[in-house]
Length: 230
Image (cartoon, rainbow, N blue to C red; front, side, top):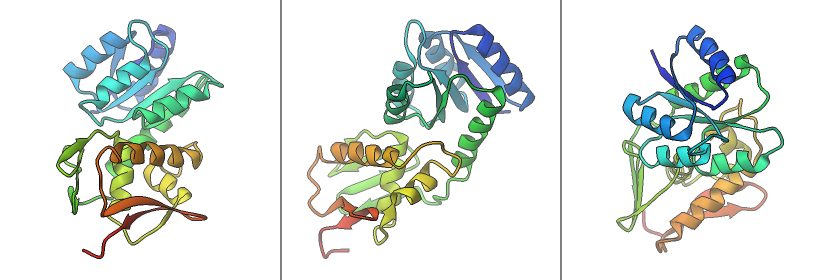
């Protein structure tokens, strides 16, 4: 049975979600503040985390960041209606999806299942990619450039892997959105652009003269080889 950690300081919400989650065959863990959430996470190693933004002691952003330091467990963040900056921030720091209040418990369960399906149906069947000074390891989710580690979120790493391992292909924004976030993701192509921007910024911390992530105007993005080698 998969473990679902629900983190929200509103006990009425957690009670309702826990009931629905149990009906959907999840082993439910509950936390009502950020510090307790992290303690439970490290002790219980849940399979998926449902995380509210506004909480006492540590907010959802801080909890998400700390989890992402050691784990790529699926995280869905709960944000207030109209607070776009919360949604964008959550995606930037590594959340896999977001849910806007108010919501129905059925919608939450559907979104959790959708994220879990994407994780379980990951089409990548190899674990290591290497090209000149770039190495991507999917077993431990690490990236190095010229032997220097580059700290990426799961989505940034997945994006880099997709482009680099298919370097002859130019991907449209819609293709990347559907491939990495799923057809049932309620976002738009600006999500892809913001992830590309952050990915480039992190990769550019180390010189990599033989390759780059190129914008193909009117199309999208591709991994461009700047050398005749390989």
